[in-house]
Image (spheres, rainbow, N blue to C red):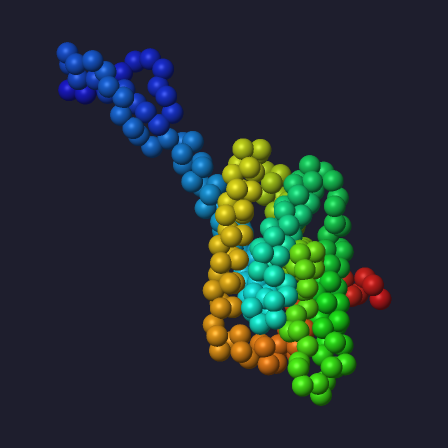
Length: 233
């Protein structure tokens, strides 16, 4: 007959003792393990739910990198990590009571990709008729990639802030680690989607029109959905 042993029981272990046999430790489900698993799942769900559209941005950036060499692939990766880091830092600060970006102005950074798109469109118009089309890019370096990432995810602060405010320090650190891993997954997905040769050929030929149009569309959607235009007028 087995009986639960006496004494201090470590997390995830329980002592079972048969008659006449010394107690032995056996693994059992632990609440801490369940809490960790819940945090991992929640963090992954929040990141995926708030960054689905970021896959499109990354795909365009990687296509541009392969078709023209600008931005460089490492700049796309570094800019994505830098942008997400800014968003997470702003959310953590807001969770501590600091107003980094007032909710009514959260859509204002959407003007960044829109402006980059306008710049790319102007460059395409100026070089129209030339034998060699201009570079099919709107974001040209690390800072512009980070700016697009921040603009595209500025509304994520509204989702991240209450989460960081309620889950505590340990779970927040786990969540940040999950975000860091998923940024790499997102970049790999965008790189894969932007690696098809036929698509790259199309972008090389028409990208000086397509890429600025995509950036302008992304910026317009961010600004319009946030309602910031009404506050500016």
